[in-house]
Length: 348
Image 1 (cartoon, rainbow, N blue to C red):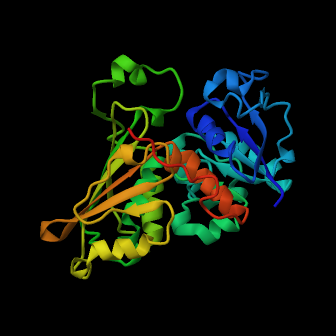
Image 2 (cartoon, helix red, strand yellow; image 1 turned 90 degrees about the horizontal axis):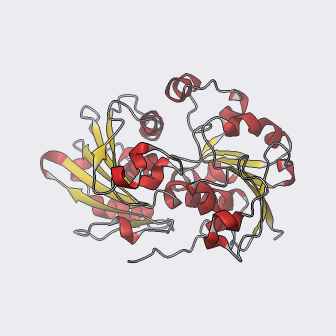
Protein backbone atom coordinates (compact mmCIF):
# COMPACT_ATOMS: atom_id res chain seq x y z
CA UNK A 1 0.00 0.00 0.00
CA UNK A 2 1.02 3.63 -0.43
CA UNK A 3 2.75 5.01 2.62
CA UNK A 4 0.71 6.99 5.15
CA UNK A 5 1.86 10.61 5.31
CA UNK A 6 2.10 11.50 8.98
CA UNK A 7 2.23 14.87 10.69
CA UNK A 8 2.99 15.40 14.37
CA UNK A 9 2.02 18.61 16.11
CA UNK A 10 4.07 19.20 19.24
CA UNK A 11 7.10 17.05 18.70
CA UNK A 12 9.34 18.17 21.56
CA UNK A 13 7.59 16.43 24.44
CA UNK A 14 7.88 12.84 25.61
CA UNK A 15 4.83 11.60 23.71
CA UNK A 16 6.08 13.39 20.58
CA UNK A 17 9.49 11.75 20.61
CA UNK A 18 7.86 8.43 21.47
CA UNK A 19 5.69 8.78 18.37
CA UNK A 20 8.83 9.39 16.33
CA UNK A 21 10.56 6.33 17.82
CA UNK A 22 7.63 4.11 16.86
CA UNK A 23 6.72 5.67 13.52
CA UNK A 24 10.21 6.10 12.03
CA UNK A 25 10.66 2.33 11.39
CA UNK A 26 6.95 1.73 10.67
CA UNK A 27 6.81 -0.04 7.28
CA UNK A 28 3.78 1.91 6.02
CA UNK A 29 4.55 5.40 7.32
CA UNK A 30 6.27 8.41 5.82
CA UNK A 31 7.05 11.09 8.41
CA UNK A 32 5.96 14.24 6.60
CA UNK A 33 6.15 17.08 9.12
CA UNK A 34 6.73 17.71 12.80
CA UNK A 35 6.00 21.07 14.35
CA UNK A 36 7.35 23.09 17.23
CA UNK A 37 6.82 26.80 17.66
CA UNK A 38 9.89 27.26 19.84
CA UNK A 39 12.27 24.96 17.93
CA UNK A 40 11.34 25.74 14.31
CA UNK A 41 14.31 25.13 12.00
CA UNK A 42 16.13 22.83 14.43
CA UNK A 43 16.88 19.29 13.19
CA UNK A 44 14.88 16.80 15.24
CA UNK A 45 17.98 14.69 15.82
CA UNK A 46 19.77 17.67 17.40
CA UNK A 47 17.18 17.69 20.18
CA UNK A 48 16.83 13.90 20.32
CA UNK A 49 20.19 12.23 19.52
CA UNK A 50 18.51 8.82 19.84
CA UNK A 51 16.94 9.57 16.42
CA UNK A 52 20.20 10.42 14.63
CA UNK A 53 20.36 8.64 11.28
CA UNK A 54 16.71 7.65 11.58
CA UNK A 55 14.68 10.87 11.48
CA UNK A 56 15.96 13.59 9.13
CA UNK A 57 13.13 16.10 9.63
CA UNK A 58 13.54 19.59 11.03
CA UNK A 59 10.95 21.14 13.30
CA UNK A 60 8.49 23.32 11.35
CA UNK A 61 6.68 26.42 12.54
CA UNK A 62 3.02 25.40 13.07
CA UNK A 63 1.94 28.85 11.85
CA UNK A 64 3.37 28.27 8.37
CA UNK A 65 3.14 24.53 7.72
CA UNK A 66 0.29 22.99 5.69
CA UNK A 67 -0.93 19.98 7.67
CA UNK A 68 -3.61 19.18 5.08
CA UNK A 69 -0.85 17.53 3.02
CA UNK A 70 -0.88 14.70 5.59
CA UNK A 71 -3.10 11.64 5.74
CA UNK A 72 -3.14 11.67 9.53
CA UNK A 73 -2.05 14.21 12.12
CA UNK A 74 -1.13 13.33 15.70
CA UNK A 75 -1.50 16.06 18.32
CA UNK A 76 1.05 15.58 21.10
CA UNK A 77 0.11 18.94 22.54
CA UNK A 78 -1.52 20.56 25.57
CA UNK A 79 -5.29 20.42 25.88
CA UNK A 80 -7.06 22.84 23.56
CA UNK A 81 -4.64 22.75 20.63
CA UNK A 82 -6.21 19.90 18.66
CA UNK A 83 -9.72 21.35 18.80
CA UNK A 84 -8.43 24.64 17.38
CA UNK A 85 -6.95 22.95 14.30
CA UNK A 86 -9.24 19.97 13.82
CA UNK A 87 -11.97 21.72 11.76
CA UNK A 88 -9.60 22.58 8.89
CA UNK A 89 -8.04 19.11 8.92
CA UNK A 90 -11.35 17.26 9.09
CA UNK A 91 -12.75 19.37 6.23
CA UNK A 92 -9.70 18.37 4.15
CA UNK A 93 -10.27 14.68 4.86
CA UNK A 94 -7.27 14.32 7.18
CA UNK A 95 -7.56 11.87 10.07
CA UNK A 96 -6.86 13.30 13.54
CA UNK A 97 -5.52 11.51 16.62
CA UNK A 98 -5.37 13.70 19.71
CA UNK A 99 -3.24 12.52 22.63
CA UNK A 100 -4.69 15.25 24.86
CA UNK A 101 -8.24 15.43 26.23
CA UNK A 102 -10.05 17.51 23.58
CA UNK A 103 -12.01 14.55 22.17
CA UNK A 104 -12.18 12.13 25.11
CA UNK A 105 -15.25 13.45 26.92
CA UNK A 106 -18.55 13.70 25.08
CA UNK A 107 -20.11 15.78 27.85
CA UNK A 108 -18.97 19.33 27.02
CA UNK A 109 -19.93 20.72 30.42
CA UNK A 110 -17.79 18.09 32.16
CA UNK A 111 -14.85 18.84 29.86
CA UNK A 112 -15.09 22.58 30.47
CA UNK A 113 -15.37 22.08 34.23
CA UNK A 114 -12.26 19.93 34.51
CA UNK A 115 -10.06 21.51 31.84
CA UNK A 116 -11.12 25.16 32.29
CA UNK A 117 -11.43 25.61 28.52
CA UNK A 118 -14.43 26.30 26.28
CA UNK A 119 -14.85 23.54 23.70
CA UNK A 120 -14.58 25.16 20.28
CA UNK A 121 -15.73 22.34 17.96
CA UNK A 122 -18.53 20.37 19.53
CA UNK A 123 -19.73 19.17 16.11
CA UNK A 124 -16.45 17.30 15.60
CA UNK A 125 -16.51 16.09 19.19
CA UNK A 126 -19.83 14.35 18.52
CA UNK A 127 -18.25 12.21 15.79
CA UNK A 128 -15.00 11.55 17.68
CA UNK A 129 -14.29 8.00 18.85
CA UNK A 130 -12.70 7.09 22.18
CA UNK A 131 -9.61 5.26 21.00
CA UNK A 132 -9.29 2.22 23.24
CA UNK A 133 -8.93 -0.49 20.56
CA UNK A 134 -9.52 -3.48 22.81
CA UNK A 135 -13.00 -2.09 23.53
CA UNK A 136 -13.93 -0.11 20.42
CA UNK A 137 -11.89 -1.52 17.53
CA UNK A 138 -14.70 -1.35 14.94
CA UNK A 139 -15.50 2.25 15.80
CA UNK A 140 -11.82 3.19 15.67
CA UNK A 141 -11.44 1.60 12.25
CA UNK A 142 -14.16 3.79 10.75
CA UNK A 143 -13.32 7.00 12.63
CA UNK A 144 -11.83 10.22 11.32
CA UNK A 145 -11.17 11.73 14.75
CA UNK A 146 -9.79 9.81 17.74
CA UNK A 147 -9.58 10.92 21.35
CA UNK A 148 -6.63 8.87 22.54
CA UNK A 149 -7.35 7.66 26.10
CA UNK A 150 -5.47 8.90 29.13
CA UNK A 151 -2.81 6.64 30.61
CA UNK A 152 -4.57 5.95 33.90
CA UNK A 153 -7.95 5.27 32.21
CA UNK A 154 -6.35 2.66 29.95
CA UNK A 155 -5.24 0.57 32.92
CA UNK A 156 -8.53 0.96 34.81
CA UNK A 157 -10.83 0.27 31.87
CA UNK A 158 -8.99 -2.75 30.50
CA UNK A 159 -8.60 -4.10 34.02
CA UNK A 160 -12.36 -3.88 34.63
CA UNK A 161 -13.85 -4.49 31.18
CA UNK A 162 -14.68 -8.21 31.57
CA UNK A 163 -16.53 -7.48 34.83
CA UNK A 164 -18.35 -4.46 33.40
CA UNK A 165 -19.36 -6.23 30.19
CA UNK A 166 -20.86 -9.13 32.14
CA UNK A 167 -22.50 -6.97 34.84
CA UNK A 168 -20.68 -8.73 37.68
CA UNK A 169 -19.88 -5.70 39.86
CA UNK A 170 -21.71 -4.73 43.02
CA UNK A 171 -22.13 -1.00 42.41
CA UNK A 172 -23.27 -0.29 45.96
CA UNK A 173 -19.56 -0.39 46.84
CA UNK A 174 -17.15 2.05 45.13
CA UNK A 175 -14.53 0.71 42.76
CA UNK A 176 -11.10 1.63 44.11
CA UNK A 177 -8.27 2.45 41.71
CA UNK A 178 -4.91 2.91 43.42
CA UNK A 179 -2.62 4.06 40.60
CA UNK A 180 1.10 4.87 40.39
CA UNK A 181 2.98 6.49 37.52
CA UNK A 182 6.54 7.33 36.59
CA UNK A 183 7.59 10.96 36.36
CA UNK A 184 7.45 11.10 32.53
CA UNK A 185 3.66 11.11 32.87
CA UNK A 186 3.92 14.74 33.98
CA UNK A 187 5.39 15.72 30.61
CA UNK A 188 8.66 17.31 29.50
CA UNK A 189 8.59 20.62 31.28
CA UNK A 190 10.39 22.49 34.02
CA UNK A 191 8.43 22.02 37.24
CA UNK A 192 9.62 21.87 40.83
CA UNK A 193 7.65 18.72 41.69
CA UNK A 194 9.40 16.72 38.97
CA UNK A 195 12.95 17.89 39.64
CA UNK A 196 15.30 14.99 40.38
CA UNK A 197 15.87 16.09 43.96
CA UNK A 198 12.10 16.37 44.52
CA UNK A 199 10.85 13.20 42.82
CA UNK A 200 13.76 10.84 43.43
CA UNK A 201 13.77 8.72 46.60
CA UNK A 202 10.18 9.81 47.23
CA UNK A 203 6.63 8.52 46.82
CA UNK A 204 3.57 10.72 47.03
CA UNK A 205 -0.10 10.87 46.18
CA UNK A 206 -1.41 13.82 44.20
CA UNK A 207 -4.75 15.21 42.97
CA UNK A 208 -6.47 13.21 45.71
CA UNK A 209 -9.41 15.63 45.75
CA UNK A 210 -9.97 15.07 42.04
CA UNK A 211 -7.85 14.17 39.01
CA UNK A 212 -8.76 15.09 35.42
CA UNK A 213 -8.79 11.44 34.42
CA UNK A 214 -11.56 10.63 36.91
CA UNK A 215 -14.47 11.96 34.79
CA UNK A 216 -13.00 10.22 31.74
CA UNK A 217 -12.85 6.91 33.60
CA UNK A 218 -16.33 7.35 35.04
CA UNK A 219 -17.86 8.15 31.65
CA UNK A 220 -16.44 4.96 30.16
CA UNK A 221 -17.34 2.84 33.20
CA UNK A 222 -20.95 3.96 32.85
CA UNK A 223 -20.92 3.33 29.11
CA UNK A 224 -19.48 -0.17 29.42
CA UNK A 225 -21.72 -1.17 32.31
CA UNK A 226 -24.86 0.65 31.22
CA UNK A 227 -25.23 1.63 34.85
CA UNK A 228 -25.27 5.22 36.12
CA UNK A 229 -24.71 4.05 39.70
CA UNK A 230 -21.02 3.35 39.14
CA UNK A 231 -18.87 5.02 41.79
CA UNK A 232 -15.10 5.35 41.71
CA UNK A 233 -12.39 6.27 44.19
CA UNK A 234 -9.30 7.08 42.15
CA UNK A 235 -6.01 8.14 43.72
CA UNK A 236 -2.88 8.62 41.59
CA UNK A 237 0.66 8.54 42.95
CA UNK A 238 4.03 9.70 41.64
CA UNK A 239 6.81 7.12 41.93
CA UNK A 240 10.53 7.78 41.46
CA UNK A 241 11.04 6.16 38.06
CA UNK A 242 11.00 7.56 34.54
CA UNK A 243 8.36 5.44 32.84
CA UNK A 244 5.91 2.81 33.95
CA UNK A 245 2.46 2.62 35.51
CA UNK A 246 0.90 0.20 37.96
CA UNK A 247 -2.78 0.33 38.89
CA UNK A 248 -4.29 -1.86 41.60
CA UNK A 249 -8.07 -2.20 41.34
CA UNK A 250 -10.29 -3.40 44.21
CA UNK A 251 -13.82 -4.41 43.22
CA UNK A 252 -16.78 -5.94 45.07
CA UNK A 253 -18.52 -8.57 42.95
CA UNK A 254 -22.25 -9.19 42.94
CA UNK A 255 -23.69 -12.65 43.62
CA UNK A 256 -23.36 -13.77 40.00
CA UNK A 257 -19.83 -12.45 39.73
CA UNK A 258 -18.76 -14.34 42.83
CA UNK A 259 -19.67 -17.61 41.11
CA UNK A 260 -17.33 -17.06 38.16
CA UNK A 261 -13.87 -18.44 37.46
CA UNK A 262 -12.41 -15.00 36.80
CA UNK A 263 -8.99 -16.23 35.67
CA UNK A 264 -10.64 -18.19 32.88
CA UNK A 265 -13.02 -15.34 32.05
CA UNK A 266 -10.18 -12.83 31.68
CA UNK A 267 -8.03 -15.20 29.65
CA UNK A 268 -10.91 -15.85 27.26
CA UNK A 269 -11.83 -12.16 26.97
CA UNK A 270 -8.33 -11.10 25.99
CA UNK A 271 -6.89 -14.15 24.25
CA UNK A 272 -7.11 -12.51 20.81
CA UNK A 273 -5.83 -9.12 21.94
CA UNK A 274 -2.25 -8.64 20.83
CA UNK A 275 -1.33 -6.15 23.53
CA UNK A 276 -3.11 -7.47 26.62
CA UNK A 277 -1.46 -10.25 28.57
CA UNK A 278 -3.43 -11.95 31.34
CA UNK A 279 -0.79 -13.55 33.53
CA UNK A 280 -1.13 -17.07 35.00
CA UNK A 281 -2.88 -17.44 38.32
CA UNK A 282 -0.53 -16.55 41.17
CA UNK A 283 1.78 -14.39 39.04
CA UNK A 284 2.18 -10.63 39.44
CA UNK A 285 3.12 -8.16 36.69
CA UNK A 286 5.96 -5.68 37.12
CA UNK A 287 6.38 -2.37 35.32
CA UNK A 288 9.79 -3.39 33.97
CA UNK A 289 8.12 -6.29 32.13
CA UNK A 290 6.43 -3.80 29.78
CA UNK A 291 9.00 -0.98 29.65
CA UNK A 292 9.27 0.44 26.12
CA UNK A 293 6.55 -1.84 24.71
CA UNK A 294 2.88 -1.49 23.83
CA UNK A 295 1.97 -4.41 26.07
CA UNK A 296 -0.36 -4.17 29.07
CA UNK A 297 -0.19 -6.97 31.62
CA UNK A 298 -2.64 -7.85 34.37
CA UNK A 299 -3.19 -10.39 37.13
CA UNK A 300 -6.44 -11.41 38.81
CA UNK A 301 -6.63 -12.12 42.54
CA UNK A 302 -9.96 -13.19 44.11
CA UNK A 303 -10.19 -12.04 47.72
CA UNK A 304 -12.45 -12.82 50.67
CA UNK A 305 -15.98 -11.46 51.10
CA UNK A 306 -16.63 -11.37 47.34
CA UNK A 307 -13.87 -8.90 46.46
CA UNK A 308 -11.37 -9.21 43.63
CA UNK A 309 -8.07 -7.38 43.14
CA UNK A 310 -6.74 -6.73 39.63
CA UNK A 311 -3.17 -5.52 39.15
CA UNK A 312 -2.42 -3.84 35.81
CA UNK A 313 0.89 -2.54 34.43
CA UNK A 314 1.83 -0.66 31.27
CA UNK A 315 4.39 1.78 29.95
CA UNK A 316 2.64 5.12 30.39
CA UNK A 317 4.31 6.58 27.28
CA UNK A 318 3.57 3.62 24.99
CA UNK A 319 0.30 1.77 25.65
CA UNK A 320 -0.62 4.70 27.87
CA UNK A 321 -0.08 7.25 25.08
CA UNK A 322 1.93 7.09 21.84
CA UNK A 323 1.86 3.33 21.25
CA UNK A 324 -1.90 3.29 21.64
CA UNK A 325 -2.11 6.21 19.22
CA UNK A 326 -0.13 4.23 16.61
CA UNK A 327 -2.34 1.20 17.30
CA UNK A 328 -5.34 3.40 16.54
CA UNK A 329 -3.72 4.71 13.35
CA UNK A 330 -3.12 1.15 12.16
CA UNK A 331 -6.79 0.28 12.56
CA UNK A 332 -7.92 3.52 10.88
CA UNK A 333 -5.87 2.66 7.79
CA UNK A 334 -6.83 -1.02 7.62
CA UNK A 335 -3.53 -2.39 8.96
CA UNK A 336 -2.98 -5.08 11.53
CA UNK A 337 -3.08 -3.52 14.99
CA UNK A 338 0.51 -4.52 15.81
CA UNK A 339 2.11 -3.13 12.64
CA UNK A 340 5.26 -1.30 13.68
CA UNK A 341 4.55 -2.08 17.33
CA UNK A 342 6.32 -5.41 17.75
CA UNK A 343 8.69 -3.81 20.22
CA UNK A 344 9.88 -6.11 22.99
CA UNK A 345 10.14 -4.70 26.52
CA UNK A 346 13.53 -3.56 27.76
CA UNK A 347 15.02 -5.64 30.57
CA UNK A 348 16.80 -4.82 32.76
